[in-house]
Image (cartoon, rainbow, N blue to C red; front, side):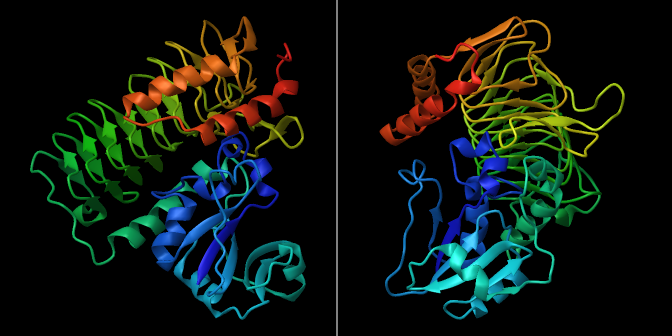
Length: 396
């Protein structure tokens, strides 16, 4: 089978994270959605997303195998995957008005045409429907990934200097992972340490928790699950129920709670996020769909930050703050709770972060990882810059 993960209208509800990537590149649990499907199916997996993103995230259709289109917001489990495999060409699965999956065979028809012949899938299936789902459902997704990745696998040895509270069997270290002089508590869920990742001495970790490949949890860090740190990250300070996608740093003290941080972000020393209002009321979050703040129905919600954004030293983010792509936030006091993409400044005012200046910074950040900012990435960033002009006050 050939699997193509398609984005529906939900992708707009996941902005600013989906400005730069398809929904299936969102990390929740241990893996991205695409990585989950690749692992569970052992198949080729590609994308069907917005045209400007398809330059980088391409669609691969098969002329010899049946093409299975699966909604990219679906987090797979074995039962759902088995039902997808049973689908005959032209048949699909749906819940309410949402198309979950279809076996299109060799047919190039519009996906919406298939919903007429789709059968209702009655079992619950984990989905990412909004920004808050990423941290709210992270614990459930992390357990699914832990079971998927560690089944019939043997963990690397755990050093005697590590203090374990709870079941040691719920700790899994990939090859090359290091952990010494830290405390792991698995009472509430598993702890997964990726390939060549390191947990430094003095770190306190309560599962569920995942640390991605080549990432570092710094000395004295305090982690409350369910929390995920993606690959190639450095994290210190206090983190609670948050997801950091990858290639991003929160290397110093400061609190991050009930938050989602995109790729290539950096939170300066002593950056703090509020995740609870003083009146204990529901948190409102800016919606790119309605262009206004909307009630999340949650009492705890911190910071959502798009790719390539940064905060300066001692930055304070108010409860329910959304920062777009390519922004640089700094200065005393609380900045606005919605900071448009390519903004520069903070409480005292926001200017446009010029696209050439932003990409110059990105080039330096990539070079530190021995990577290159490709032309396709520049085109995507330029498209986002133009598409978000109306959100910036100076319109430049």
